[in-house]
Amino acid sequence: MSLPCLRTTDAGVEIFLYVQPRASRNRVVGLQGEELKVALTAPPVDGAANKACCAFLAKLCGLPRNCVKLISGETSRHKRWLLKGGNFEAISARFNVLLGLDNQL
Image 1 (tube, helix red, strand yellow):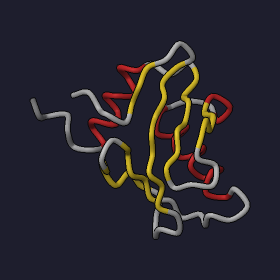
Image 2 (cartoon, one colour; image 1 turned 180 degrees about the vertical axis):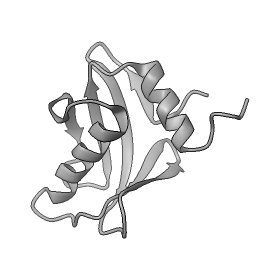
Image 3 (cartoon, one colour; image 1 turned 120 degrees about the vertical axis):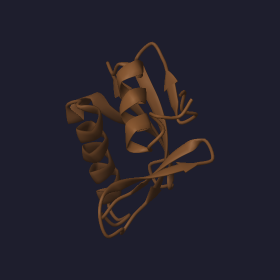
């Protein structure tokens, strides 16, 4: 299933997120419109939530942190990240599994 929160580019894969800071644990919550909603324990202060989001995305996608770059939304809950060198099919499959969409047609 194609996710609306993912887009392939020449540089890699772009992912659109809606971030909920100060959550009880880091996790993928689900889709919210055309964004992937993630909950992070970090507060939205001094870039802490952005750093936590970068680390969380890198871990989920199996990429080094230096391959995960914030494109837009530094001070917003609506963020766009670039997963440099990421494989679209692999990343899409990973998020489909996390969202429980892998068994749907």
